[in-house]
Image (cartoon, rainbow, N blue to C red):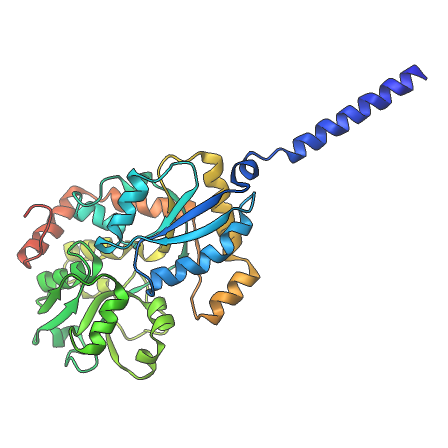
Length: 349
């Protein structure tokens, strides 16, 4: 009898211990009752804002502990302000994440004085799309192709000198002899689009194709814009006749430059956390991100908004960023020399 009682007590203790182990989840314990701040490196209304808010609405339910996720726009310097905030100021505990321009790693190499921390050290969570930037002009601009742009000046709207909307036109001027005139100072991509409609500028050098289709479908349907170039490593299926940036290269060195500028196309709308967050929380955020990308409710919501989803894992994004930031200094020097020759402001002048 005594042996049976002891066995029973021992069995109960083992069951209680096992139950305790099952209940113990440090990730859920940490996130339970907390709020994650989702910092968006653009103003409201553009494609980066749209994709960010779509993700934020569903991400929290896939994170252990089900934290609330609130969005916060932090525009400035083509997303550089938000990148520096995440790298230098934001808590490194997994309670702050962000999404900023996918070309930030290239900017780190081209404009090192504007990016204060190595993007390769960020805690990359994933990317929502394998996106293609396109170079567009307004239908009344008289410039429908790159060859047209070699004959006629076109005013191109841009946010800051270190952003793609400025860098791409300047580099095309330098390498191909086009005559794009960059107009700086617009607060966001959507304001450039409105400026195009008002006739203030005649084009934009870097707009995400999927975002343009979702946010301004009437432009495409009504042929209000000409698409001159795709900035990616492979063509979009619905743009078979638009050349890639790499197609325009005339020498092996130019091809290296064009590939460097196009390398971020596999990490459209990238989501990251600050450097140095705990490894188990980064793993949980990466899993939650991919689970969200496969969530039927999320996919239904983005389909209704005509947002393309083709995700990349956090590990894949990490590799892409590290490859970009390890680009040889000799190639960067050639690009900066071309920018300076085109009259662009670089970190050297």
